[in-house]
Structures are given as C-alpha cells and as structure tokens.
Image (tube, rainbow, N blue to C red; front, side, top):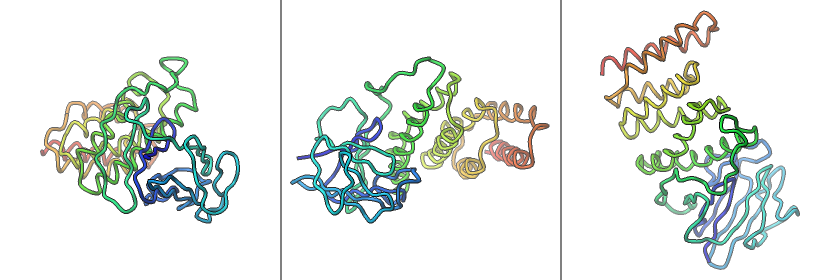
Length: 281
C-alpha cells in the first residue's frame, strides 16, 4: 500500500524508507517552527504500513491528540502534530485535488518533480480579491517554504528544469499578488526573489532576473542583501536582462533615497552596481 502525507494544501507522496521531519534542511520535511527540533521525528514507510517515532525531541510528537512514546503505527486518517504543525496520513491515490510533491527518501535519489501551478481546488478563497487574511498569508508562506526546500535539493543536484517546474507556479502567485496589491509578507517576497535569482543562475534565463526586479519594483523597496548577492551571480550567467525595467526600478529608488538609512543606501549602491554589470552584458 502506498501512502501520502497531507501538510497545509499539499500532499507529499511517501516512498519506502525513512522520512525525517524537523527544522534541519537535511530533513525530508523541513518545518520553520520554533517548537520543532532540528531532527524531531521520523516516519518509516514500508509495504506493511507507516510508523512514526519521536527522536527525543523537546516537545514530542502527538498522534490523534495523544503524545506518543516509542515507535507508533499509523493508520490512514491519523493526525500527527509536530511542534504546532499538523499533518495527516492518507492512502495514495492516482488523482488528487491537492498538489502532490514527490519527496526525496533518505536512501534514494531525487525523484522527478511534478509540474505545479494548477489551481488548488480545495483552497479557501479570500474574502476580498485585494485582501488576504493573516492566516492565509501565513499558509502561503509556509507552503512556499515547503516547496522551496524540495527545489533547493533539485538545484543542488543540478536539476534546474525540475526546480523550475516546481517553483514556477508559486513564484507567479507571489508576483501576481504584488501586482494586485495583496498583503504579501516582505519575507515571502524576499524568499521568492532569492529563488527567482537562483533559477536565473541555474537556467541561464534572464526572465527570472527580470522577475526579481519586478517584485521589488512593485514593492518599491531595495532588494535584500541576500538577493543582491544572488543577482550578482545571475547577472554574470544570463545575457538578456530588461535594462529598461531595471533602470525604472533604480529611478524609483533614487526618488526615495532621502528617506533611506545607511543600510538602504548601501543596498542602493549595490543595485547600481548590478545595473552597470547588466549594461556590459
């Protein structure tokens, strides 16, 4: 019997072997939650079924409302809480209303990642087309972090096309949210921009570098330092940069520079360096 783990609005297909959960990037499911230990729990998946074991974490593992001790068998429908994050074990199915992500087993290699970007049928719609609730923003940020963790592994294995297929839909959602004036958190924008720059470097496509510039143009603020670092690498690997858009972005920043502090002024100087670099390509 095959299984999947539902977390947020995504279904993660479980391959046979060990499936680690924790804050560490080495885990198959990396959770950004202060209540989660670096290596918090492990699911062991076999043809016979799935078990979960607490790896001597600080806050333990709860299954169906009861804290467990030792290796505990799971049944489809069981709810597992790790930190403040809840997930549900389900049987695998051929067609899911939720996005399905193939997750890297501990002993295997990175499987083929599915294309994403299809509408999530079961996602609750925001009450207003121009306003997202706080909880919706948090869910979107957590969902992006989940997918980004898998894409990071694909990039590390030089599978840029797979990382691009995985992230293109979520990245498009972020920029469309910015275009529509939705309440997108700055952290989510910075994360999306960083991965856009990584994709520009990995694929050689200038359109991903242009994506990053558009994000910050819409946000009307300087790129984060980490994103500038990524763009410095990307601009040396891609040829087609939209210089007009980049210069429009810089003009907007220059118009506001009187209100900037030292850190923002330094970032502005670094972005000016990016413009000079792009002009030489």
